Image 1: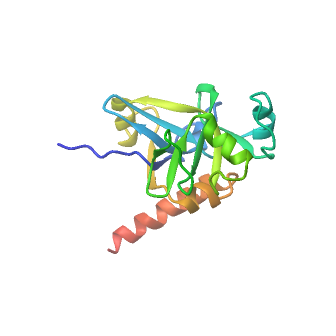
Image 2: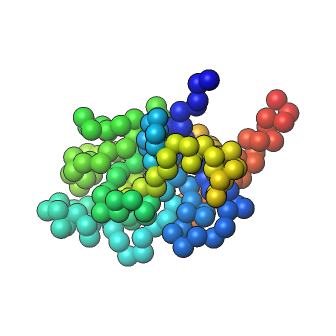
Length: 184
């Protein structure tokens, strides 16, 4: 049996999940790694208050970043910035997630953004969520501690939806697609 690879999919917390202090209970995440033994996803809709790219890039010696927000990507390696971005810009370390969206985790993307030659669309995220493959499969099937819904990642869903409303919009889109399947 061949299992589906979820790389580049949005994984959205089911509304029946309990409230969790880490913000994952209303999360919209993009899956950035799907290997045989683990799945990693970066949360896209949880903004750090008062933390911007300009504040953190100054400490790295990169000026002129602008006040772009930093998102809480997840609980693992929160000291690492991952840039989820449109593929109009890439570097040798960019990993394509879809035909339109990639992730870059090195300084090249921050330098490009500071020089106004980087990707047109991006979100800077600190950290990521991590599951072992079996745990995520159970949760996706509704048999685990949490339940997840899947939605294909698009430029609109990732970058154009306001992060304050991204969770609600994702649930509405999932419902719409489910109803369309009923009448297909």
